[in-house]
Image (cartoon, rainbow, N blue to C red):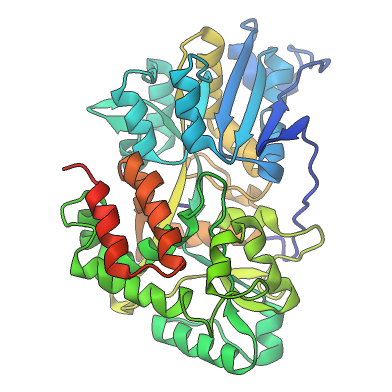
Length: 448
């Protein structure tokens, strides 16, 4: 839900976008490239897709440096096959992909971060089911748990792409060591540490919810992580599947526990302002005050490794590192909440199928992992490629038999809730709305 021995790793924030406008990054995958000799050894892994040609459009929410890493990860495929990939990354993906489809301008391929949104397009008949060749690669590459997220009424519509670990608490080992702080092992220790940091004159937490049309989602990660830790996977699953209402007392209790941190003026928002500043602080910038000692910790996914400025040392003794948000009841195992993207298609042209096949291979997973700040649940991924220490940390935790893993709850809910009222409700809640009113608002939006 998650990337990771190189004791020192520099995260480069260089960006070479062809065009950046309106929150969208438009990236050509290789137009104008001289290509590569298709008979050369370096092109051997791509031999099956040669002589197809054409151009394939991909639309996703991945932007900035992450988008540039994507472009590099499939460049060799482009050079060796002649199939061009035109990539567009947008901060308004969740809303705009529907606009594109309704307007007859659907992308060939979309990377869906929410299985609930994927299911909506499958139900409407817009998505193309995975052809047999893609399905075979999917079954070879991923566990059934992952494939189930992209299977609707028995039909596989998409394949997993990246995975991310969404229970990371980013911090500065240097800052901790200088002040005698230790990484907490339980929730109670986390609160004790937060109190200590606050008493020392530093806001223990930084946070940010702004993300374009997707504003609010970082706060849903808080709630999901707390519900999983406070109630265990059974109640978590019941909540996600609406077998218990959103305004159930167990969910309200989880909001109250999150309230102790997110709406505590003594705890937030380091480097930016008061509690309300969280709603207008971008999630990309929210964790950066850690580097200046203006806040102590930041709950954010493993993908945040790509956001640290050039020259930042990511390691257990460096500028930044991460730990798993501690359990509330350690006897229940190690709770982990994660997410990922799924490759769905609105077209079945041969070149589109070819790109879908390539993205479902271990070859692609290893090429993307080599670019850094990324992890996949693909069983063929070579973990030795993962140079970012937090990536390896996440991989180790996910492979631990004591880990209790669940996919991001809002991503599994119907899109109008998970990517709609839940996001908006969390913004209202951060801005001071009563918890009961927030829960009722979300519950009333959920169709029976």
